[in-house]
Length: 489
Ligand code: BG6
Image (cartoon, rainbow, N blue to C red):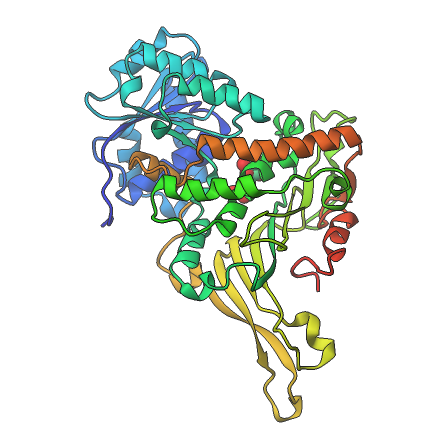
């Protein structure tokens, strides 16, 4: 039985036939239902502009659900209950007319959750139409990324929403915040004095954050090419991870206490300008190579590609945080498409002991590392130095892990998808895991200056072969500081 209770609501999904809804959102809602976390009175409204019969669209939703939920998790009774909750409505999001019908399907006296899995350009119109239909007062709106492509456009979107909804009812998604291990960062840091007392420039030498993907562009060239990897991944996911690692302890777990601390970190990020543009950042674009031993095309040869594009599919950079805690501690961020494997991990490198007394050739290996693995194999491992066993080994050192692998340790508990947690928290009215307007704006401010610098410099992204860890210069970026990406030595 679930340990938390969830109030009933009407959940309206705008863009219900889109890729995100079919691949992630309906499966997440189904899993919540299966876990007993959808109230019996909760109703789901699937809203889309596509012509065609409601029955056909509902059949599509159900068949895609069967495709994206693992077979073992499909329980006929739950599936039937889930399908019973669903209603499909044809709706032109920007026209007010259809919203009267929508209002008739919203249960009396219950909150409406309006999830916008659609282009940000129509968020303002949807909000206005919800307001005209008399629904705004009891609605929480959920905004998917990307919210704009720079500070100015993100402000336009946020301002259009803010005309009808106070910040307390706006939930901006960054799905990384819903990942189990990202959640665990907060527990790890603030429930273990062991770490928190060491969590600063006295003890930590540097931090690495890697979010690597094996896939290429997957038919999303149109969207991706306008964004590039900096906007698509760094502006949101990697900066959020950096904030959770770098922030000061909040005074409590409330949404605003956590978000206030994250904003302080974003404000303290040193802009990367001048010489830093060539020494502290690397942009890359993949060329043809191999993935899982099979040849794959380069970015410019993907379907619908513009062969002149200079969008980056890889970024590595060194970020510096200008405050007492992190002065002199670089944060190396690296993210790219078509890397050798899917891997998201944070590595905290602790400083060497003040006086080294072991064999000189082992020195590089020494130093504790805390490895926080977000995916795959979610878990936390602390690498500690011990002595090799055996009479003949002398004081030969070895680095071994103290390991906590979440799926092995708690075998019975499945690790929920990020969207399950996020949808649950919206239904519970908890904004903890959602991004506040000022966070987005500071993140854009920092990224915008970097993009402007790139534009001025006019340098093309550096090529790297699909299936590699990025351009050689991304290795130079860190070796220049006398370090290496974790795993490279
Ligand atoms: C999305 C990006 O926000 O995150 C995608 O737009 C990327 O380009 C995806 O593939 C990665 O998410 P995850 O959860 O698979 O690491």
